[in-house]
Length: 131
Image 1 (tube, helix red, strand yellow):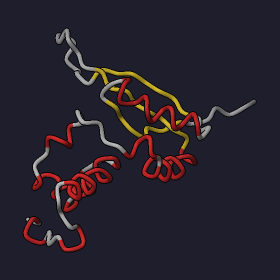
Image 2: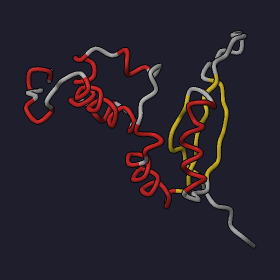
Image 3: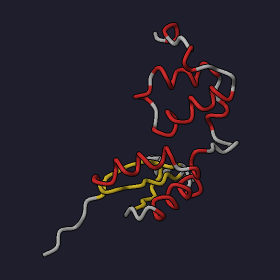
């Protein structure tokens, strides 16, 4: 009897479009994955439920996926309509101060956006942002 592989939640996306770039990279790297669509809203009376896409990977593939997603040119550019573009400088710095509260892509793109906005991260004193 063959044991079924276990897939664990790896990342959530707000839409199929958001997930597509990541999925293309997984396929190019030949990493096996599962996708699951589910409603964010738990109230059955809400008619316009928003959907989330849950990407699942085998645990043995987590590290490899984490390494290439941060290096791959296809993901390194932040779409102009991405929500982080709307963040103030202080909000982006907060991501640096509290990285455990943010996702991998947020932690990756926040410093890039700060650099684009003229910050020198090597000389940025974040101590006064820590509360």
